[in-house]
Length: 109
Image (cartoon, rainbow, N blue to C red; front, side, top):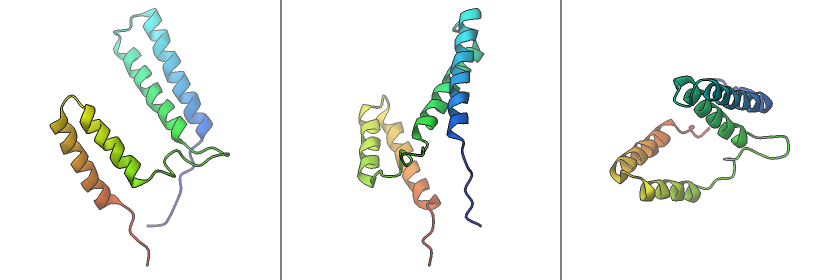
């Protein structure tokens, strides 16, 4: 498999996030906040906004570029500690760790 990078236009992601949130707000104002499309647009806009914040810009690296394994472990610990269903959160965390070990990039020789 060749090492290819897909360029992500940070500005486009931000505009899509803003457009989704505005569309959800307009639908909620015109129809009602219980409309399925209103909730879908708002959730998608918030998700794209989080991706936009995490993407690298010209002045800084990506948000996850300097994360240590201890910070990630502490975040998962906090999720388990404050989850409504700690058993489910623990099982999901174990599955994510197993998946991360299996999917991680291989060391080049």
